[in-house]
Length: 99
Image 1: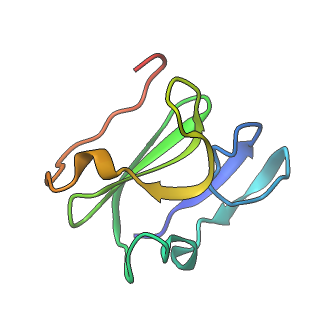
Image 2: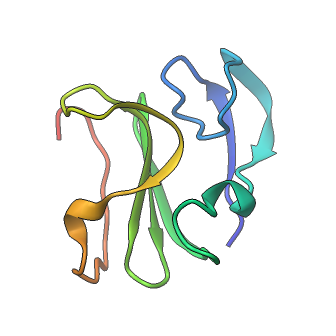
């Protein structure tokens, strides 16, 4: 499916690879920006919290963007594959503070 993002972007949580601090209107999270992950990505589910967003793809992979303050990865300005879950077929994701 298509993913759109808007709102504050202080931690790149919109996943648009933009340094803009906020977007007032919905902007598409272009599938082409996900080509670093796979050749074709179909998003099945998205969840978000204050500064991090996750997407579950229809093939069971998890993408993350925004702040990853409590990990060694820092900030992902655009969606990145969470390789820690490979080769697990993830069926559900959830976002929240201090997870």
